[in-house]
Image (cartoon, rainbow, N blue to C red):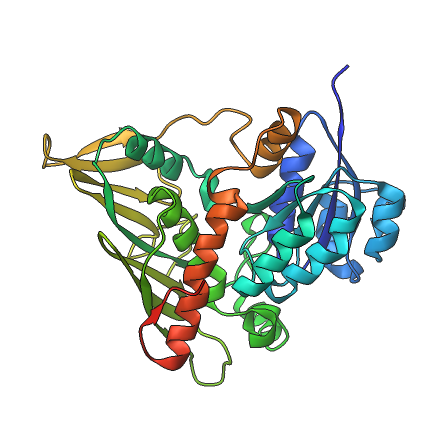
Length: 358
């Protein structure tokens, strides 16, 4: 008889909880045994869309953990609470999927790793890691299609974090204006800002494309609009032994990449010693240029099959087969990404180039 996996969703501060619960609901061997937040209002969308019965709705994580007894917990707290949330849940002996970013600082990331220990898996979910365009690009890199990676160029963002909720449902300008003064996305102490929201995507997947190599030093700038306490635009340059890579984050694009790609396009351009790959978000093909075909050619993205379509499938696969979490979701790769993020944030504050924070 196939084992069934008990999953709980705790802390609905990030709207990605809706996407993650949908993945859990669609998995044939998963039961959603509980959802929890101290605000009933934040859970209402999930309660309605996933038909969560009243006895599985909690306002206290301790009661949720003790009564629901999940095997896996999906956490979506504000960035500034990631370490605290892990330290609260880890003692219950469960595997954890933490929604991106890794943390608001390297010190907090290390607290998360220490709290989990070696017995249970911690996966940092970067939704871009599941895009077929980026998975296909990594396959081509590993096959040597563009030689050794020497540059990663990344630009990503959206109109802003309050212009959509779970399942990418759009909000109105009036709703955005009303939510902005109260949203954690716009509060520095809670890890708000485009740099902390989006830079980790670029630096973590960039580290994956670089096969785990870390830069030597980092220079960054960010723009904080008048009246805000966090940035809506940042540019980071990381210097490696083999060259420079650039990572740019933006809240305020003219369109969201999942509806219409803005300009610049959101995603990556990977430069190797023998060619380049342009792999943008949400695209059905990627463009490759190499010495054999300098004019470039299109590659249809790979068809991704279970258990590599989403974090719920993948984490269950790793547990069932006693495998480590690898790639962008692994704490090892994500930690290097966090090192770059921390160094970039400090560089922007100090206005100078800084050696990579260890």
